[in-house]
View 1: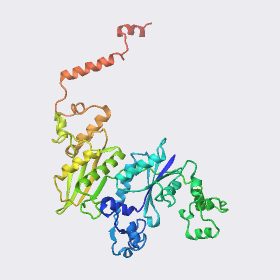
View 2 (view 1 turned 135 degrees about the horizontal axis):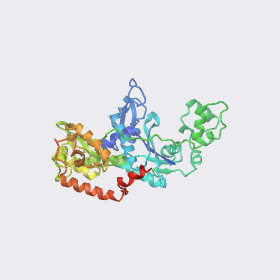
View 3 (view 1 turned 90 degrees about the horizontal axis):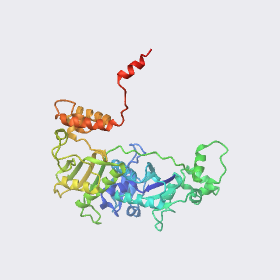
View 4 (view 1 turned 45 degrees about the vertical axis):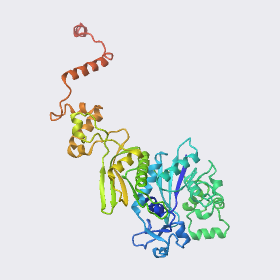
Length: 447
C-alpha cells in the first residue's frame, strides 16, 4: 500500500482566504490561541502571508507584534478551520477509500498534514494531480508527497528540499526507496528534544541517514528506537479512517470591489458554493435533500430554506398526502442544480455581503427522501412504512392499502384476482404432483 500526504501550509490563513479571496496577496496575519494550548494563553500569530513575513511578522510571536503598519490582522476562526478540514476529507473520499485527517505540524501547528491511501494500480503522479484539482475547487493550495510509509510521505510533501519553486507540487518516492530518500535530510525533521539534537550534532550526526546508522541503544528506550525506525523509512502505514458525520457547511464573502481584483462577485460566489458543496457530496456518495441558505446583507441575516422538488405529475392519494403540492422531493448533487437552487432562493437580491450554504438533509444517491411534511405530521405512518417496505419490498400502494380504512382504498377485486393468477402461473412450475388421499390412505394402514 502506498501512502499520500497532503501538506496544507498556513492552514489558518488559507481558511480565511478561501472564504474571502480578497485577502490573497495582501499582508495578513491570523491571530488567535493555539488549538493545543489552554484558553489562558495569550493570543499569538498562528499564520501569516509572505507579504506580512517580509514586514517582520513571525509565526509564534505574540499578537501585539503583528500590529505593524500595512499588516491586516484577522482573528482565527476555529469553526471555519474544522469545516475546511472536513471539506478536504469529504472531497478526497471521491478519489480514495481511506482518508486520515492527520493533524497540525510545524512551528506552532501552523500547517496541516493529512494522509490517504493511494488506490491500487494508480500512478502516484496522476493521483497527486487529481488531489490538487480537488483542493483547488475548495480554495486550498497544498503539496503532495507519496511514499511507502507516513513519515516519508510527510517529508516528501513538507521538506524544503522537495518543495522548491523549480520542482512540482507532487513528489512520489519510488517503491522501496524511503531510506535513500531520507538519508540526506536534516535531523531536525525528527521531534527529538533540542538537548539531544545538540549532542548529536556535536558528534557529527546531522542527517537522518547518519542517525539511522547509529547502533541500537543498549538500554530499552522505545522513543529513540522509534526515531531510528522513522529515519530508516519504517514510519508505518496505519491510517485512521475518516467517517463523514457532521453536516456540510460552506461560507463565502462577497467583495467584488476588492483592490486586488480577486474578490467574489455574487455570481462567482454562487458558483463557488455550488462547486464546493457538489465536490463534498460526491465524496460522501450522497445528495442534498434539504438545504439552508443564510444571506447576510444591509438588513441583517435571513435564512432561506431550500427544499428541491421535481416537476409535478399525477400522484396517488397516498403520495398526495406524503409529498408537498409543489412536486416530488429530489436530491441535488451536481454543481449546476445546486447553483440553480441558490439563485432561485436569492430571488434577485443583489445587495449581499455573505452567503452560507448548509446541507441539513442528505440521502444516498438513488433513494427517495421522505418529505419533511410526512416526517412531522405522520411519524407513526412513516415508521410502519419503513418496516413494511424493508420486510416485503413492496410499493407505497401495496404497503398502505390494507393498513387502515382511513387511507385510500386498496386495489379492486379484479386487480387482486389478476395478481393472484399471475402469481399462481409463476409458481405452477415449482409445484410437485401429489396423489389423492384415497390412494395414500390404504397404503398407510395396509395390514
